[in-house]
Image (tube, rainbow, N blue to C red):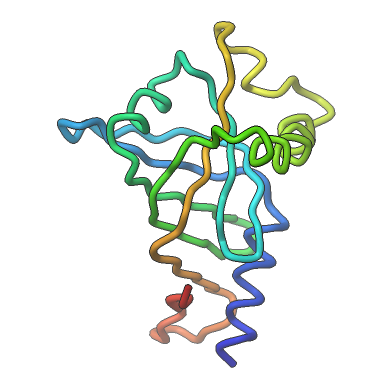
Length: 152
C-alpha cells in the first residue's frame, strides 16, 4: 500500500507543471509565487526564475522553501518542504533546461510568464525535499485521514 501511495503522489507531481513556491526573507517576510516546474523520481523539483525577482533574492538569503501543487476539480495536493539550491554546473543546467522550457511554453494560448517580466538573466533552482506529504481527498470517507507522509 505504501508503494501505491508513493507512486500516486509521484505521478501527480510529474503530470502537473505548475505549483506555488513559498520563500521567506532573512527577517521572515513571506513571499509566494506561482512557478512552472519539472520533477524527478525522488520528488526533487526544478524551476527557473530571474536574477531580478524577489524570489531569487529571498532564495539566496534563505534557501528554506515550501512548495505545493494542488487541483480543485479532483481534490488532491502534494506538499513539499526542503532546501532550494541554484544549479551552477553546466551539466546540471543542461540536464533540466529543455524540460523546463517545455513546461514554460506548454500553454499555447499565452506567453510563458517569465518572458513578460523585466529582462534579466535566468537561473535554475533545485528544491531538495526534506519532507513530502500527499493528500488525496477523493480516496477517503468523511472524517477519515487522507494525509500521507511520503518517506524520502
